[in-house]
Image (cartoon, rainbow, N blue to C red):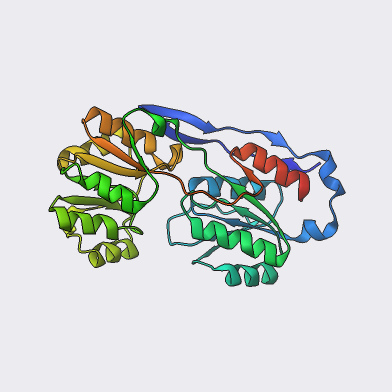
Length: 296
């Protein structure tokens, strides 16, 4: 029987540290019925989140070969296991199909960010064209986003309009990919816009292109603690915080609590609707399923 190892990771929840995942399992004996061809294949794991690292390490520990594909240059720790290979750079559908053929991919595990709609669509299409299995991991939404008083919107255009309608400084925490509508509303209303983005060249270039002054940019890597969020709100006298529902690992809970404590309104951009397909919101179940089909 193939041994199946899991690692323990922690995530800051509220004011302290709590165990986020802690799994110790073994592979299913029925997994040995899988064909030799599948055993020799490779798993393509797409994503650049904390869950991506967790999935990759545990599949590797189970004896499976994993190619992790990260679209950006974000610092992603996949360890040093010999069964893990890391590649970087965005791929469209054609690029993914070519990669699938070149690396003998037998399964795509899509663990990209919940808001990475383009990546999800490309992965599903590539799996269909190449004739390989597609599975998705969907990070659970954070219940904190369902609290009363939060303003929910369907996209960034609506978020920008609702946020700047309050006529108070806006703290944007959704990244650097959708700055245009916020920068436009800030200019139209003369309301200050503060953006928090990753400390990367591409992020700073996007801010510059949007006309956001350097003094209004917080370049830092999250997730951020409750006090770090409160400090940012106080420092810029923020009246409205804009966020995505990126789940617990994305630090949404700390943002919302900080805003509540500082008397700041919150605008949440809802998760985009994705096409149906085989998906998991529990990493342990996803890993068990993969191991039962593709044992080492």
